[in-house]
Amino acid sequence: MIEVVNPATEEVIGTLAEGTPADVDAAVAAAVKAFPAWAETSVDERAKAVRAIIDGLKERAGELAAAMTREMGTPLTFSQKVQVANPVAIAEGVADVLEGGYFEPEEIGNSLVFREPVGVVAAITPWNFPLQQMVAKVVPALAAGNTVVLKPSELAPRTADLLAEIVAAATPAGVFQLVHGTGAVVGEALAAHPDVDMVSFTGSTKAGRRVSVVAAETVKRVALELGGKSACVVLDDADFGRAVKIAVANSFMNNGQACSAWTRLLVPAERHDEAVELAAQAAKKYTPADPADPSTRIGPAVSKAQRDRVVGYIRKGVEEGATLAAGGPEAPLPQGFYVAPTVFGGVTPEMTIAQEEIFGPVLSVMPYADEDDAVRIANSTIYGLAGAVFSADTERALRIARRLRTGQVDINTAAFNTSAPFGGYRQSGNGREFGRFGLDEFCEVKSVQR
Image (cartoon, rainbow, N blue to C red; front, side, top):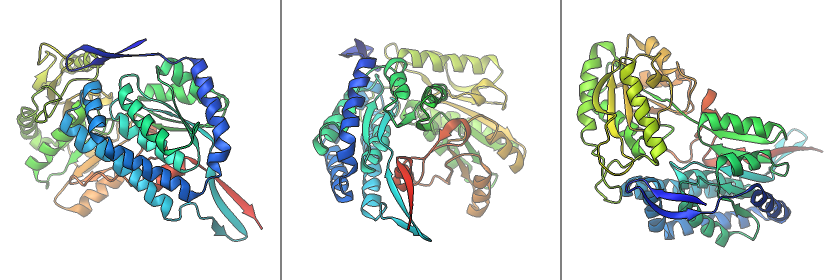
């Protein structure tokens, strides 16, 4: 049995039966059996199923938000406005594409090109945005005519159970299967299973490498959404106060546990000290507190292990010579897996905190000499998931954005778009999620010549 712990109170709030390879075999067998009939359903029928899932998410929004706050410590208001709202928008985007003629065959010369389902899809999802990442995989996979076996994070099982109830009510028996357990056991068995045609994985880059290796034995399709070390580049003509404030908010969102967070703040060298001071002042507004309180802006790390990992990185930053401007390794509260929101100044590109994904509320302020230097620093990690550029000149900002080797860039805090492609370059993964780009991942393409 796996214990489920509330990270704000350190109390055990439930137990979970750990899945086994035999459970994976049974789930995959059911998905294989259900695939032919589901793949042959009309696009209209599958669209109706997606709309039913959307209705279920809306009807149970309160339960879902409360479950995520309780299981992984994200502030309740953030759970409601982002952790539930984003998945609804993602599912609506898939439904719109499905109903907009996505599966109509395309004529190319004497060929008809068809999109068809891949087969049985294994979806392996993380704990930090549990509902969003489950919906971003399960809904487009089902919409494309695939059957799905979901392995959610063992740290957020209740959220997964609620989604499973919603999906099961909208689809025929066998089309969707849920197997709880650890990545080392259930995830490994799914990635290796000869009857799984595709693995869609979101998690750490280290775990993603392992999924790729295991899946390669059966040459199955693999889509990976992995870690990030995103840079926020503030140009010299930007509204400096606004840019720094927004960068701090982005870095600390979801308790600092977001793969796309802008954890490196790149500023002109002559304004470095000013930026550090502004960031330290902004960090004071993020007081760790009970995530169930609607006024709380930052809650605990998801687990003791994660808290200890983040604190280890903070200590490493101090050891390597970065200047601690706010926060630090000391626990801000006597109970719960809390980390003090932390800002470092004087961070150089070779430092560990500038290269490795910390996954906690830690922001590194880094000076650059000119635009070329900013781009060089921004591209100096193994990652390439997200980023940002702030400038009073949007065309100038766009030129910089085009030079960043990353899958997504926001200019002057543009709104998050749940229909635009989301995914990374380099070791941030491969493949894309959301909208028609997410549907593309779960389709085979067939050409028929006449």
